[in-house]
Length: 228
Image 1: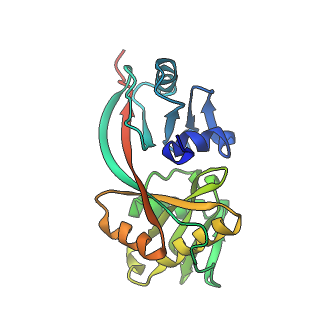
Image 2: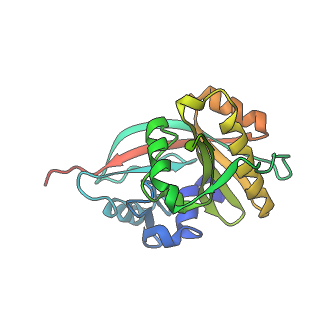
């Protein structure tokens, strides 16, 4: 199985080990960084270890190409299909431009507010620590951003792409996505990303940048009951 088939596990087991909790059977991101978790495989011991990482009344998200096996102690609140797209090495992405600024800890509150408004995917107070982010400010306001999420040897995910409603229609998301992908390729890594299968506009946008469909992925929100 390719690492891209279980990108959450690969990320938590390598580059993001410092932001993880769990062991070699199952891991999750610490709670203020992200909501994703993954078992190593579908072995009963690994699935039980995954369930043990979820507190009563809490949910985690799984994202992978194989069918999602649900641990007995958890319940699927929702399941959906997504797509995984990848940029062939050498795709000619435009590099960052002069109006794109690196975002850091001082920008975290604005990043979180923009993500809550636009919902590009799970984004928590310390999600920005998962990788580098670029933003565009207009009249001092954070108008748009894009950055990195899952990362493991040879691959980094483009994520957190969003634009404030006041500044849509200017191509900001497209430019920032290309700039982030350019930086990933400059490190000798391959850029990939995810989108909901039903989000045809996003899929078309990323396709126009040079990303191609690799596979469908399964996404599930799993919850542990809060009752005794």
